[in-house]
Image (cartoon, rainbow, N blue to C red; front, side, top):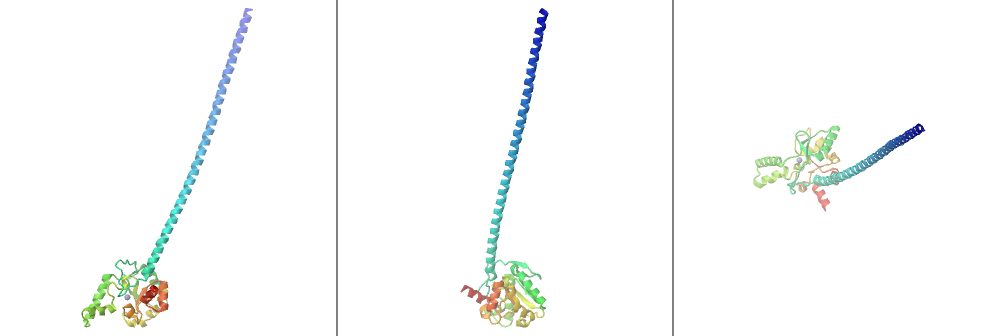
Length: 282
Ligand SMILES: [Zn+2]
């Protein structure tokens, strides 16, 4: 009987222990499962957060890029406006300068800045007129006329030298004092009153006539130039019979660039630059 009871008790103890083990294992597995779930959730959360952050970052860079693009566009528009204003001011200045009157009564302004470019043979000419001059001479040549440019821009010092030489020659012919200066000034402009100091005037000779005198008038180059120069923006600056207006003798070799529209108007009206400017002012 006693042994029977002992066996029963032992059986209960074992059963109890087994039960405890099962419960403990259950807890362990449950806890592990719970931990795994939590870890997965956390991972999911962090992935979501990361992708949200990336999205936000991308959206921000897109916004920044758009903003940068907009700023660049505004900057460019501003630069365009500035360029246009500058171009207009240049055009306005050009219009005035290309019609600048220089004669015995109108000295070249002290602050005048010529816009010069090299045109070959050591000559300088206004860069805004150099292309027109080249075209004119090339077109003449195409029609068998050889016109040779011999004197473009002159510095004040060079003009002074020319004038002084002329005075010496006039004195050799018997003129004295102020009379010599006056006589010289009829043919060589007093320094400061020569269009050559503007850089817009060119003396052009016929290839077969090297003389700077009235015989140029009948030379083929002058016939061609007198007929066509206005098509290139030039005028014959000192036409025959205008000495009173221009203060300079007839010079069938001296061409002045005034721009295309003014050259056409002056030529069509058959007037001097002086008369043309007077008419414009009046
Ligand atoms: Zn000249």
